[in-house]
Image (cartoon, rainbow over the protein chains, first blue to last red):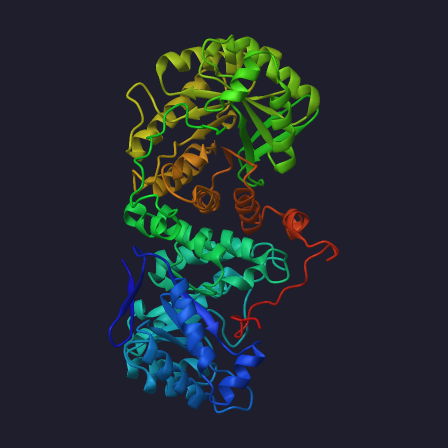
Length: 302
Length: 302
């Protein structure tokens, strides 16, 4: 049973085949958030800290931190964001940048074993990021695209993932510290996008024995009722074996789908997390003992 | 690709591996509905008809009809319910009774090829119901319990299903006309209930090549926020290959999970059913062309 341990100075989170699904909060990211970008650039991290606490409160078990602001000193801002977030929460972090120097500055500032986001199958990226993963002993998100771009062929995406895992092992990084993102395409454009992810997650789990993650919300791009579609998708991805996602925990419908999927997968013993989240006030602690099926099972009400 | 065709005089519904998931509306059932029971017994079918129309409107593609009222003439009431429902809708029906004489009266009254609910693996039941299935050329729900009751061992439940399918074939009934209910246990009592169903559905599909159905709502018995849990479950059951369920289409959250799962499975071409259900007024017809992934895929808003 593959397990990837991510930690802060005082707290471990396990991403694993036999573990509850891990939501990695995506909110601390100035991309598309002009106000946040302006504040971070000006050295005001109050919203970063508020977003961190709100996401932890909502159920995120790891927080993604991205400081990608045009014309700003991204390494310094990312490092400072990480220091400030670690000063107010023990939730482990995912250090997210497309700039290798920013990844390194984040790793330098971080206390514990973070998740690094990300490496791709591009040779130049592999050669620059994997030594950092090895040096700092962290785990890494591996995105299954390479120098030729993102393939619509799942076999090609699988092969890219395998290449990254093998290359990581060449650097002495255990496969268990590579979490593969099979890439979620918008299903409004590619009708097979959902099945692709489900098939890839199964193969990544069975053949490469690695944990998986994804940016879940890309699936619903351009469609109405995105939260509704993302919620169905995340339950189904979990049913297929996906073990984490980088997504927005502030969407209660999505978190309900994750909590429900944890129950269905048998990863919420005694349904206690479910009951804790949804019990009505004053209704007591435990579940009623259920009926064990039987012929009159389709009982309607009223 | 297994397909089970259920029909009324003028309309066919296909339950199949490559088809959108079929919701069988469970509401027309006096069990636990005292008012409905009293009305049906007194010959007042207005609520039966209203429930039929409301469920069709909400997205049910087949309607289950049950007339199980203590000390009433169930065969006559079931037959009359079927006649009246068929007079107002062309939606095919599922004839539901634990009394064989009522099943036969329903079959006699029905126009088209109905689904019969149900046969079990009990020998006496097999010997009485299967000849009716053959005589009337209908399809049948096969519930995987037998004379020894409901096993918590999935292998035993699978073997009961296989026994029913083989027995049906002995009577000249094609396996494609047997829809197996693997039995959904309350997960508050049996933590593995969800995984059991997912595993059974896969095996029933791959080894017996049969369609599947279930009474989805039994899963959440005794737990809070039942609709939320049922919604996650139904998406995951569809991901595992389940092709229909007997459930309540009036729960919009559940229907959203079904419609979302149809999209993810690639069974909603161009996402047109999804868009039809959820587009905002005046927002136009089609989906926007989505992005094809890429590195900056975790785009946050505001």
